[in-house]
Length: 332
Image 1: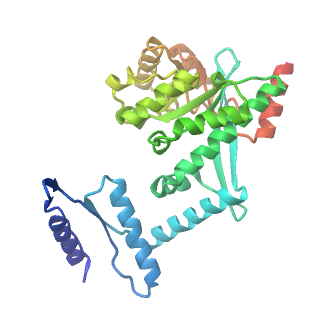
Image 2: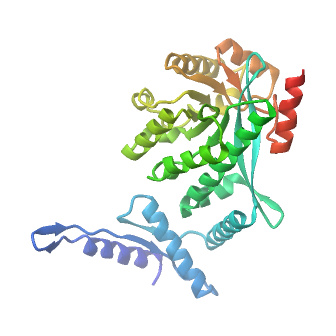
Image 3: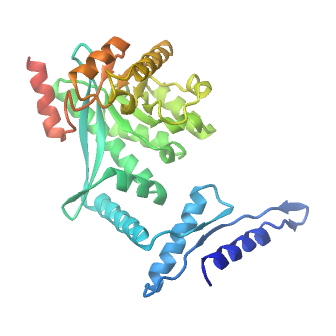
């Protein structure tokens, strides 16, 4: 059958499956997630089933009780290749953290952000490609736990070197929805033997809109442990101020979209100034991301931000390079 007929059949299935079922005195309302793939000329049957399964997983990701039609064959194959590369990287040491410093306006190192890198067959996989695949397949939880453990260990090594610095580690929504998240956080802190105050968790701005009970409980416990919370890329997503006031965050990171047009765009400057005031009134340190020029930094200083991050200060670097960079700054 063709695309339209397949979609029509799937929708009929959804309607039939949704019919209530009575078991004794209980009324059950079933639902289904349906993935549909149309056979392509010359396509391997296994590849066809894999595409249908991918579409079904996407239907689940979107909330279930719906159908998703499989997209382009090549895109599905690319995602499968990336997923395979992620599994191989987890098993054979193909993952690495790079580090980018965050500097206060007085030049001191306020924190260091850990950035995940993935290598397959000697080539680096673009984070913009592997992160969405990891989120879709559920691998993001394993990647996040690996990053948490490696990041805390780096913070401990910075301490032993005599340059104790807060280290920011990105965490995903999937991690925070897991009941074992706090267990993983405690485990990383204990294994690394690092003070919790030296660890920050960077949260995507979208989490502000989706604070489930599990997420809220995990964030509250993290703060009780002594770990900091930073809201990343703030200002371009779907910010909800009523939720922002309830989030126990300690840092607000302004998205680079506002920084790149400074100092010429005065409307962006006004927004940066307003968000900075808001964050500081809520007791948060305000950091501007994507700073590349001295004139941008001067405008940010005028807007009142506390710290900045970007190529103007340093590009992401390996841990060995970071340790040397930190030691060199201490000697000045």
